[in-house]
Length: 302
Image 1: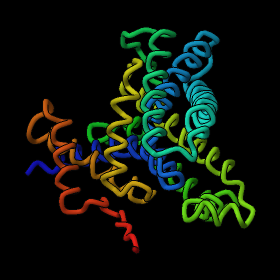
Image 2: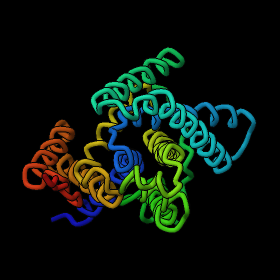
Image 3: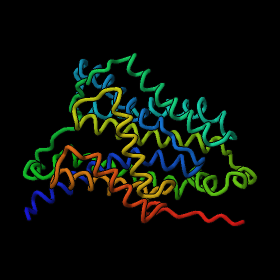
Image 4: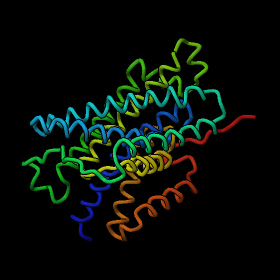
């Protein structure tokens, strides 16, 4: 076995899974609290990438250096995406809080299509070049044939985001409110928790992680269009279901498993069937583990 090639595929899958994880976290956090699949989440990721492109284009004309442009573009993408996530929740989901789940699901699909076409009309249907905002580090050149410095930055950024998110959920006041709301919304409201505020913050946090993923992957791939949110969103949703929808560790694990599956199958078999392998693996897991890898099956008492 060519161990260097194996390591290259392993690290490539780890990078791909890290991007999926940044998006899947938004799916699983929202589902864990209000049991809603936010199918517009992929479009938030796409809007973050487009925001970063606009900001980076303007700042490059002003002569700023690469690192400053990356930081400013990422901050702008996060702020703008959070605003969209907050607005989507208020307009499309809050009025349907007590409606049947199917109504909220249809609203989510409709919002996804609306945002896609909104960006299509505001921008273009063509792929647009995205500048390489992540710098190449000289000290990393001897290892660049295995994993590039851009992929290294993606891995480090994802790891830092995961740590910050864990701290937020486990040790902060709003994080405890999120966990209480996810456990029982009625009891959380009775003890003084503002459930509506918790839900809004959940959408904002999920939108922020998706925006970071959008900036990183767009800079790494080098091009974007209005449809990237749909593809990435479906993959991230698959990862969240694979790991156990509603479980944050499950979303991360499912994303990594999906990333490695795609990487190894395309590396050793064929890249033409990348999506086929991913969804076949999902079906295989759900046959033997319907709740996902780390998911728990709910038992209903009668």
